[in-house]
Image (cartoon, rainbow, N blue to C red; front, side):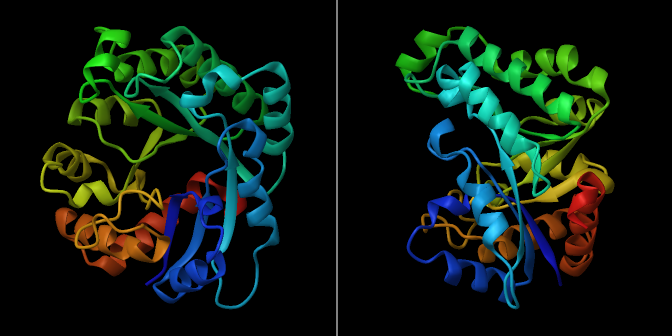
Length: 280
């Protein structure tokens, strides 16, 4: 069984990254997309550095993305976007992201600032012909302060509207990372040429809506990820997540779809390679 983790923050592992990667390979995770957002634009190059420097027996193949997370949208200055363009142009950097909208935290930039950063990065990715990795988090479950700040605005509605205007016309694909939306939002994402990537929260008791979307999604548009070091799947919830733990999510997704874990692994790995031909 060979799995591909389509979303992991490998730069968060500073003390034991080599051990984490060896455990991943031993568990069957033979490729990882390292997400290059860092702690903001100043460190978004770290994932690409890891991808470039990592090779050898017993280690997964590492690819990278680069992007400015919506929480850091106020930092999407011309200089930061120029740096992003340089990173995204590199062969080992196969995607721009994670980018999008986040109305969950009170501290996040205002809606206008987030939208501007998102649009700028979609245009940058389109110019390079590279897919985008989407982050979308609504304020539905946010604190009262965040709800007051963002009001009735819906991150999913705003996101899909911006995608329809600025991304869909390019006919380029993308990934809805850690898909946590409804069946309707899944259908609209699929229609916009996105793959749905499922993380450890698929296994949580209150995540039936995510499981419904996971059953709906066509076989050629599903991916699996960890979002490590976050969202460890059951039975490991609460622990620091890492790519090796993705096997639990893969088992759960396979069971939902009525196929073997081996079939699920082969399917999602093939989907990743179809989405990113340069990662073959």
